[in-house]
Image (cartoon, rainbow, N blue to C red; front, side, top):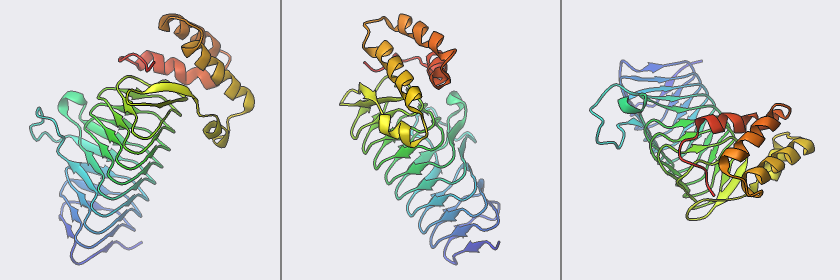
Length: 259
C-alpha cells in the first residue's frame, strides 16, 4: 500500500516509514523514528527520539511521543520508546523515552486504549489490552500488566506494579503495588473486591471466578500476614491456573501491596 504524507508534514529523511502509513497535516516525525505498516498519525502529532511504532496504530492530533524524559539524570542518551500494534493513542498524550538508569526503554504493548491527556513516563512497561481513561498519569518505572483499567485522572507512583486484570477507579492514587484482579479506589488506593463482570466478559468461568474470590479473601479478609497469604495462594495456584499470575506478582512486587 502507498504511503500518504500530507504536504505540510515534516518527516525527516532518515525516518523509516512503512507501507500504508498516513501522516497528517503539520505532523512532525524525527530522524530516529520508525512507523509500522498501516499506522495513522493525525495532524499536529509529534514523534521524535528513538521511537519505534508497530502496525495499525492510530495516533491522534497533538500527541507527543518519544520526547526526553522528565528526569534530571537524563543526558540525551539514545534511549527508546517502543510501541506495539493496534493501539489508540488519543489527543495530547505524552509518552517519553526511557533512561539509562531504568533500562533504557519505555514499552507499550498491543491493543491498548489510551485516552486523551494520558502521561506515560520514562521506563514504564505497559502490557496489552489496557484501558487508560483521560488524564491518567504514570510516574517513571511503573509496570502495568495485561488487561488493567485505570479510571480518569488516576495517578500511579514510580516503581509500582499493577497486576493483571486489576482496576482503579477515577482519581485513585496508587502508591503501592496492586495485586492481580483487585479493584481499588480512594485518595490512597484501597482494595474493594474483584472485577467480576469484567472477568466474565473476558471468558473466565464461574469456578475460576470463585477461585479468584477465595484468593482475594485469603489476601485481605482472613487476618493473615502477607507472608502467610502468599504461601496459601501459591499452593492453590498449583491446581488453579488462574492464580498463577499471583505467584508471578509476589516474585516481582517490591513496594508492599495496597491495604
